[in-house]
Image 1 (spheres, each protein chain N blue to C red):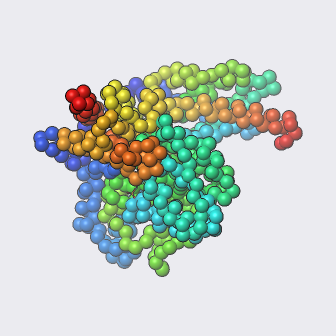
Image 2: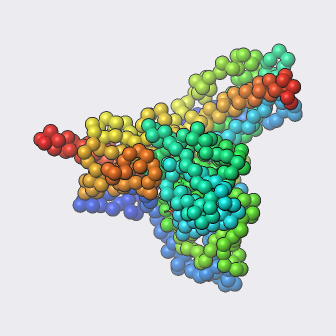
Image 3: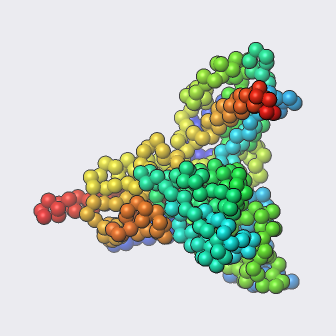
Length: 134
Length: 426
Ligand SMILES: Cc1ncc(COP(=O)(O)O)c(C=O)c1O
């Protein structure tokens, strides 16, 4: 268990990076773990060139879910969307660097899931405005 | 925070020391009801010694009874993630609470309105709705399962949902095969057609964290005796939904949904059961106290995460062992990769041995496990197991040990081998 509470995770949890909101985000999504209620609201600012130049999140929940969001937001800042789309579960787990029990996988991957949905929503929204629906 | 210490926890449960013919009892009957910690026993005793009275009076013992109920509602609200203690109502048990509230819900429905139930659920979340439908001319529709892994068929849910659907009654987890249902998704689909969701969390609650708001449940029911407390039921109802319902109660009872004199000693014990869970969280959990979750809720969540992690190791051990025994079949999910989608409640059958015979053979060895259909009648029928006596249910809770799992596996191996030998000798 000591392993589980590796200092770095606790540090991210207590002092999360990129914690806050963006006034005019280009993509937003609130993800939640349906059983324990861990939450992450992720906001992205995306440049014309398709680079994530701003990123912020708020949330509450267990150390793993919140530290994972802190680390993930660090790693996507300044990256093009194409590269971000390639991020997989293993990347997030590697970044956390500790063994995650199957019951905690949902917590660890909530940030990635929220990121994917934020980007999917944005694509859906863009498609609908191009159709002149919105 | 230290490593999960099951022996230290077991020492708090006097009944776990029970012996039968010189062998310690092994309790694998948790899904039917759990043992209680000394704290619970003490709290019930203390209630009788210091607080015994009816509520609402102007004197010490009555005031203490009021205080116990108020505190216990707050504790259960935190256990379930409710917004307010006012959303928690106590009652005799889940079944009685459900019959009671179904009458209030029914008063808001019109003939030909529809209620959705599932094949996976305990009858306690089916029969009250069927009776209500009989009384009021409603239509009941049933969501089917995928029989291969005993999960709900969500296409079948979509097929029965419609503009007339007013309520979806679904379990959070199956008390027979352990499947955890995607209730957030189900509640979202119900909401999309304007229906309420009534969640039976009786089986799930001792096994993991619950957040009624994240689930999107309008009602959620649980029973304290499944989570190390007394025989008492509790109902969560979202405040605005409860407020809009007519109540069947005696005039002028001060609570709209708690009828008659309450089981105060049971409520005192229930409060102690939540306190026990908090102490598990403080000892073995990671308490998110600085993440904006007030103390009690954070401690409970920490406990349930620690319990979930621990139980999962035992479930993996049990299922791995079971699939290695010839003649034993696991009903429901058995893949190691899907352990997080289920509770550690495992249904099995043994070729040539009826579930009752298997339970008797285990019982003779001091291993307690239930056989039958556990009121999940529709599920057991759907799996084609009703005629042959249902299943043997092996239920793990947080006070079981790896050594007990090994002892259970060894016993089952013996039972299956005896049968094999009999067949061979034929
Ligand atoms: C899933 C489930 N629902 C409902 C019930 C009935 O609960 P109660 O005994 O509180 O009426 C049980 C009891 O075994 C159960 O396991």
